[in-house]
Image 1 (cartoon, rainbow, N blue to C red):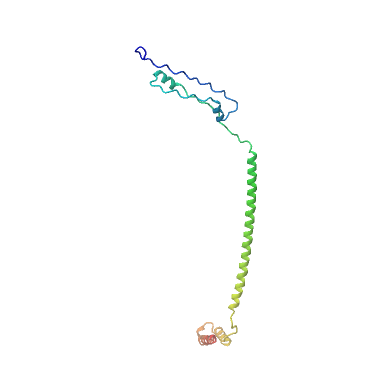
Image 2 (cartoon, helix red, strand yellow):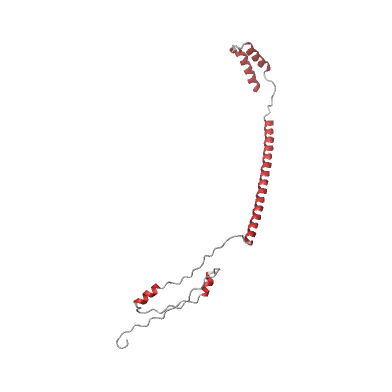
Length: 179
């Protein structure tokens, strides 16, 4: 207070920012542009009661935005390392394909071999079983009675019940021969 009149503090000095650099033909990485800019000055000390016109001026001041072109990467030709990796993968695929073809052939050969062995074993065992069940007695049993039954049926084509006694004799003969 000078002379009983309250005076406003002097307004802070205006900060002038340098103009943005001109846009180059080739875009530079964002990291390089950040390094080229001078460091921003520290913020001004807070004021107790700023005047209304200064607050409107600061709000109206636009923030600085640096426009950068988007980085577009065109893939026209694969790089040498990509070609090398592709070639290595193709060789690996060929090796794997050969491995599985060989393995499949081996398994098929083993399957065919085991099938042949099973078939041989089956035939061998079938022969053994046939030899075990050969009838021990192949002689004709009750040959005369058999002939009598046949003759009776031939002579009595329409009256087969007349051969009852002959069939009974043949049946008894067969039963006796089993014991």
